[in-house]
Image (cartoon, rainbow, N blue to C red; front, side, top):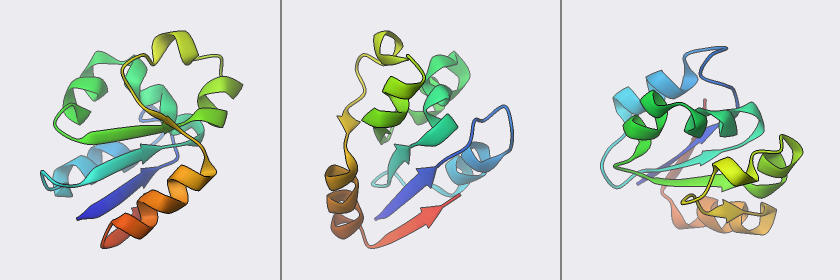
Length: 93
């Protein structure tokens, strides 16, 4: 079980696209930084739909995206650490 950590917007690089190619059904995703913008585009929200997806609350708030991220759990840094401990591997893309 892998925790994929995406920090960049899918419009800026291919981190999300690449991670999705290697993700298994029991993997999870944490989107932080500009990575939180991925859920705004239907293409990426659909691609992420089979997985558990978490958004870093501070990054969502900093970008004013809270009204657009309903349905995704917002986590703080303590939650992020707990997720890293509950997964076998963590890959930051």
